[in-house]
Length: 597
Image (tube, rainbow, N blue to C red; front, side):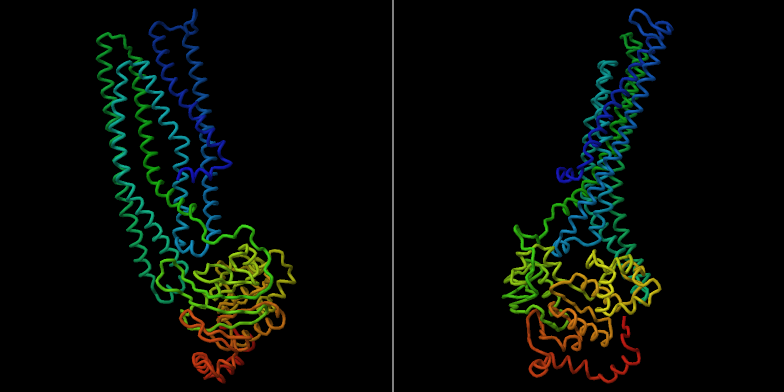
């Protein structure tokens, strides 16, 4: 785990090395200052001499040495802090970048393993915890043991056997720290899982705030959030209650040792053992440094204990291997828009009992228009997801342009297969910026042409700022139908060989739907078009219509053929067209291109 996280240090290695080096210099200087003060005190006891002679130092010389050491110690501390801050913040930046880039390479199967809220927690809270621990490790965790070791050495030099008191107290404290860690680790493991649930509650509420308000469910959402927040509080309180034993244990040892040193030191001075008052006073200073080091070490220990679980969760994401990868010597050119399904079966999880798709055999010619109709749960979307290799088939193979999709470079394949979903996503920014997701190099003329094909140019031109109109996050300031047409235009800018519309005209009226399909026939005849729809009117002019039922192809044929031979299609058609005249007149009332979104 440590080795995996260490890869994110990269260009901050030098800062990570310099910080401990300056910390070491700071510690050495701080440990020598009490020694010089003791020597100064002993010099004063022998008589006040400003400048010493014959090898003996005077008060002035000791003062200059102390000032120089204090300045050097301050400089080392400042530089250690500077490099520590640079290294830890840079490490956190790289770590977030590594997680984010890793997620971008995930397949849908990988993403299904981690909830959105969990990934957000790992990139924020968990990275912050690891950053704090790293900052402590390269500075405080270096300083504490060094200070303890150097102070012990100096204590033995100044106090002799009396310094063994400081050594005796270390093992009991080590045992106490181990027990605390052993008790708190399972609690922190549980806490961070509940953090995910808390973030998920927030995310769902914010994303669905319109539904919450429409159904007046604010109080219910508040109660749900309170339960999630209380769950986090309970476990975190338990963990913090155990960690709180750190401080009393340290304070008990701290004052116990100081009292013992004062008592025994005073006794030895009175007995005339040669131990001076100055030596005992500086021995107490070293004792305080040793115990303060242990106190700091316990703080590091508490932070590291908390961050171990965060580090584990981060490594789970970093170690996750994408299930879909481009092969070596991948094909980078898609010959045409033909699609072949050969004995295809598919299920989302390897341990799933039932296939989502079974025994799919289908040949789609390049440039052909295919309509797909089926009930909810008939696996229409699952079928088209295999074309752009968002998932791999369980059995059989899917071919595009005569080649198995697993032979293609993923980027090359997906650039030639444009998918427009029913639930489309627009990003905050101008309409132009959103459209250029399809082609970053598209000219303004190309944007307008694509929007005309998608029947979006008319409403865009009606905006005061036209194509520079700002789109709010998620496209909340445009209607559902407008959003769908913008997404269709965005897909057209890719100039794909295969265009898949997954119920992506459901929010536009039938007249606008017909105009979009007419534009497709006239202006992109060589592009293979696969249209998933709930309305038969959206697919009745397709070259062939596929009827899906329970993960299988029920029937294939033209509109006329299916009306004569397929009872499912006939029933759907008659149901939707029973009120045909009323629907037609309503469209006329709303005017051409009326909006249902």
